[in-house]
Length: 270
Image (cartoon, rainbow, N blue to C red; front, side, top):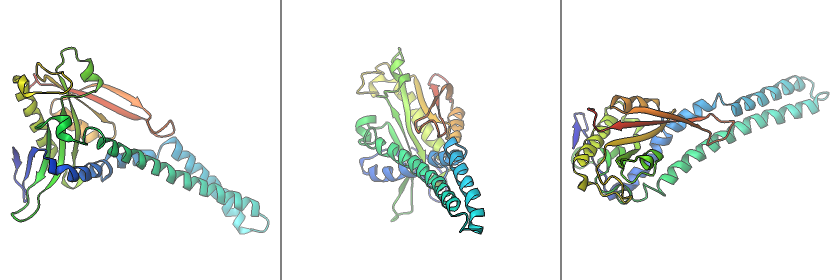
């Protein structure tokens, strides 16, 4: 157990079944709240081609509408066209933003249909950690962060590892209300320490996939370009970049998503 001093101490412990609902709420908050990938995507979207089209439609509409309003009788058709174009620009912009939000919420829902549906079943007991703020006696403690180490990873890096010794770090998150308190580092240290201990004793690892019978020697992870602070933190703890893959899950008119793939060798000192 790791602990740091504060008004309300933070501890890192293993996930319990009773944490499910709190984890669900925190997972959505981490992915949609302040400083989240969703917020960063929305900021980036302001410069996307689709947004430039929205701005152009609105500007053209205003160009037609404003002069026509001065002489509505003579410029009725122009005023109507200008109003329609202005409305189209605003409506399209709002629809794109709603589409982005729907995609992010879909990602959150998918997580709880897959690995987070039954955390201990998927990750195995002792392979998913939460950071908990410990309140004073009589007050309810609550979860402020989480991370998992997936020994059953279906990631390409894990499946292609011929030594069968690769696990995947997944679902790393810290509440936006508790950042800059070293919580993410606490979670990473707990995960790395556990992985190193289990790499020395392969009998502690019981993956459903049948891999890692020789222990874990390497931890991979993937994260997006919209999570630069997380990438910097991973590098601080020894992860090194392996590749960047560009995809466009939201279409060609929305910013490309750059996925960073990093790996940590447990043979290295961290």
